[in-house]
Length: 91
Image (cartoon, rainbow, N blue to C red):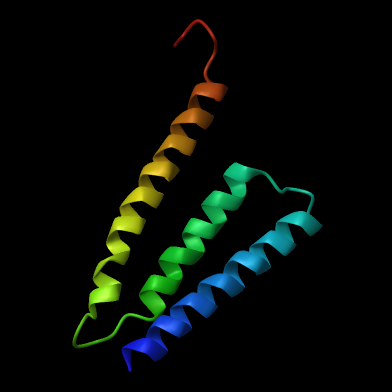
């Protein structure tokens, strides 16, 4: 049962990443930061969609490390964008 959930998670996230890569390329908006943010959103959605109701398997508990790293990367992207928007003398 856990193997099937793990496969659904991997296939779902892979489909999200490839789909977002295709859509961003078609919209000519493909940047590394935007791809990272869209992939992180897909990762978080996929984590919640395959969440079991009663018992959390060991492989799923380890995903929270990746979630924390992803959120730290997202915070870095947001701070970087804010610093780009602010006037040069303010920072």
